Amino acid sequence: MVAVRRKRTQASSPRSEPPQYTAEADSDSDMDNTVCEECSSGKQPAKLLLCDKCDKGFHLFCLRPILVSVPKGSWFCPSCSKHQIPKSFPLVQTKIIDFFRIKRSPDSSQISTSSDSIGKKRKRTSLVMSKKKRKLLPYIPTNDPQRRLEQMASLATALRASNTKFSNKLTYVSGKAPRSANKALLEKEGMQVLSKEDVETLALCKNMMYRGECPPLMVVFDPYEGFAVEADRFIKDLTIITEYVGDVDYLRNREDNYDGDSMMTLLHASDPLNSLVICPDKHSNIARFISGINNHSPEGRKKQNLKCVRFNINGEARVLLVANRNICKGERLYYDYNGYEHEYPTEHFV
Image 1: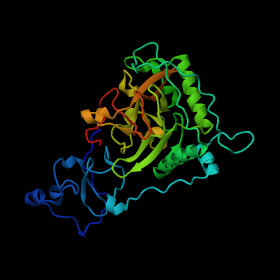
Image 2: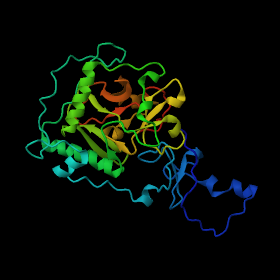
Image 3: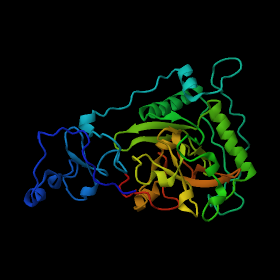
């Protein structure tokens, strides 16, 4: 997607009547003289965004966190928006249970503390998606129930700050692509079928989340990158981290008017009219806050520790984020947005 220069939508104008333009005035206009407040350059004017309050300019890629495309509606710079660290979600068990719609235990409202359902250890293999015999691992929840509450509270904080409802599955809403449009057989070059054993592993991960046994991840707020996700315990190679979820829509509906949240390819169809994307701006889970790498630089690619993989599951396309190497506790999670089409503009990712 290519950002175009954005007109100020609500910035007040000191002039009471329309300006009279001449060729000379146009060449010396304020728009032509606008420079980025961060880098002091007026280059790449198509990517200069003007604050709707102070009229100062900022390159999309100079903002922290960056903006991938021009936001819809009004936009205010960090100074005018008085950007602050989001208010933390209450660390209250009942509130967290209600927020995530966690299944309550029969004898109490306690979040499940059992992790015995995790299957026996499997032999480690490399993440080569073309291999016929590859086995994915379920994530292992943190044993301490209090720490799991803190992990879920961190996710609730991020979801609430971004005005996003929690969902742990793909959502189909009126006015967007219907569920009937999600047919894995339409994939341009075919889509690998998730094995029966791996389908069971994915179901186990879903059930653990349903019981409040969340992935061992912590959402943190970084003033430089925005929300990000860190491993809260050691995670083995080939572990399922989460499914990438959100509203399913046709790519054609989102090519020109999407406001910067990270879309994910769901179906890359032979007929572009049938191509689908996942849009996590309204409904999502922790996948929305996992960072993308700058795949235009060797340094960015070195940070990648997750693989984004699309599978045919019962005839439908699904997207999983899977560890592609061992991940240490405290390590930030990164994956490549462009695992397939290499179209997402990541050259300014930090």
